[in-house]
Length: 387
Image (tube, rainbow, N blue to C red):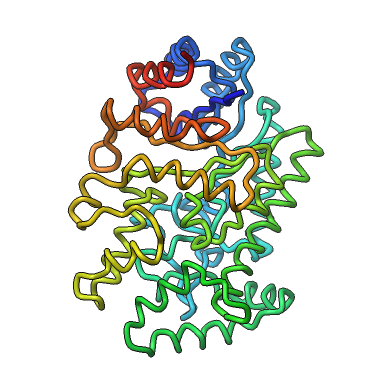
C-alpha cells in the first residue's frame, strides 16, 4: 500500500491561526489519503494542538519534523563542526538551521536529547521525523568544508581505528597533485579502496551519525514513538555522512530528497552546481563533464541547462534503484512540489513526470511544506496515484 506523508509548517506563518492551519490541512485530506503529517518545529502550542486534532479526526499519524544536528541563533559556536584547519564551518547563508553541530561532542548529544525529551513530553506525537541527520555538505568547497576534525572527533576516530592526522595528510597529498580538485571529488564520490584514509574517514562520519540516531531510535521506541528519517538523495548521501543502509535499520521508513529542480541545500542541481563551479576553477570549464562522469548522474550537457532547467525526472527512478541497491527497505520519495521563485519551480508536465518516476517507491512525501503546495498540485498527485 502506498504511504502518503506531508511536511507541514516548516516555520511559523505570519498571521496564521489554529483555524487557518487546520482548515488548510483539512482540504489536503479531502484530496489525498494522507497517513502521516510531519509537523515543523518552533511552532506555538496552539497550532500544534490544532493539527493534532485534525490528524486524530482523519486517523492519521502526527510526527514532529525535527532538525537533528543543527541548532538556533543561541547555540554556542563551540558546538559547530570544524574543518581540517580547525575553523568552524559556516552554514548556508549563515542560517542557524543550516549550521551543523558535531555529533561526537557530548554537549551536542546532551542538547539533542533535551530537545527530544521536550518533544516526547508534549504527548501529541506518534513519532519523530529526523531531518539534518548529517554533516554539512562539502560541495561548495570540498577542500575547506569537509568536517569534522574537532578534538571530540579525533578521540572518536581513534576508537574507530582511524587517525585523523593521517586523513589530513591524505587530503594535503591529494591537493598537491595535478588536477587536485578533480582527484578530491573522485575520492569523495567513493572509489571504496580498502586502506584509503579518506574513504575510512567518510565511513567514520557515517558511523558517527548512525550511533547517535541508533540511541535516539531506541529511546523513542521505549517511549512508544516511531523514528523516520529525511536523507539526501542516494548519489550524494555518502558525501554528507549518511550510511543509508545502516540508518534504514533504525527507522520505520526513510525519505530520500530526490529534488531534481531545487536550488537550495539538498537540491540535486544546487549541490551539483556547487561542485561544478569549484571544479571549473581548475578544470577551465570542463567541470560539468567531469562531474557527469564521476557521479554517473544524468547531468545536462551545459551549465545553463543545469542552472535553469535542472535534472530530468528519470533521475528520480535511478535514485530509487540506487537506494534499493544500497539496502533501503521502506523507501519514501520526497518530491519538491512547492512553488518558490528562485528556489523551486514546477509545472504540470514536470509534476506528472516526477510523480510517475516516483511510483517505484513505497510512498511519497509531499515536500517540503504543504502550506506552499496548491490544491491543483495535490489533485495531480491524486490523478497519478489514486485512480
